[in-house]
Length: 423
Image 1 (cartoon, rainbow, N blue to C red):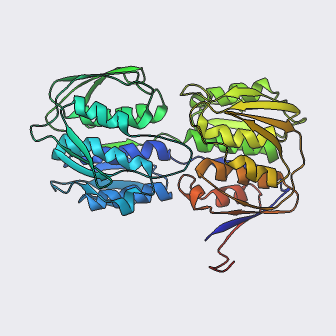
Image 2: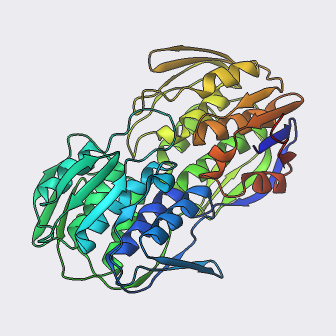
Image 3: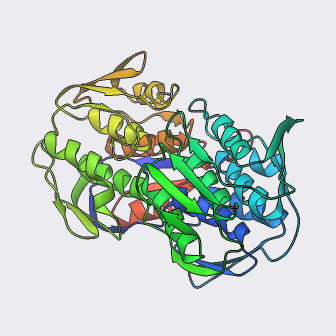
């Protein structure tokens, strides 16, 4: 099993360019099932989750070809409808094929998804909403089985709570449903907006993009299109935090600072110096450590839960006691025990972590439990004394494209290695 060995204490300098957003690319790939024509997607990151989704699409009869930074997806006119467990089990986002399959092929069999163990993310909202569109759904032998022999029909749907993948699934299903669908309490995340823009380019009729109420007037068919995936705001935020922790002048380019408002606001509040341009964030070497912060994660445009673990690592080096509350997922402090192995002073009570700093960190062997926890441990390794070994970096590879290469390009010293089955 591959690991990272990180030699701490290296200063980061230079420029790092942000990849396309994994969380935008996944629904956009699923949306290619809605048409028989080719869809060209630019800027897909080559990360494990994208490769898994391409395998899911291949099982559904779609071809995905990469050439010069472009992925061409062709669903054709096949009628396959089964996304098997051996593929779906590794990634929760694979449930996103459910809506497109029901909308265009009128039947689906999708294994209940797996993914990171950060808390319950049930698909109940997806199923209840798709049933409102006329799908006949049941759970059978661990699979969601659905049929819509007469096609889907428009309806009014109020999500009981904000759900990103639920909003995305219903947007895709409604694009080919008969009549008008009104979705209320929709997620506002930029990745949802990115999907809606692709669907519009494919001929979908959508009103209210980037708002909490979206209206979709169904069409008979969608066409092919070309679309560039939005930059990954979570990757950008991760490198901004790395630059604050260990930087001696770092430029994060090719990003969307306007989608990182909550993070940048907190950083400024705690005394971090940075400059923001249209598609670049420049972080100079910090003269003094940041002050402690109090924050609560929230749906966009609030502070992203996907940046909580990384910010918690920053808090270990801040002056004072930070209070970080995780309000989205109930099991997303698994990185805390590993950070404490490095010497961090943290107490967790309920959904709030009290982080005391600044605390010197010492390199040690640690284990990643999920995607963003992996990133937090890598950031900690950058400032720890000595070597830090991060195990189970396959979690990291699900969502960060060539992280060690990008950080090494800034001056870090990170080695990817496989110690063999007995070590």
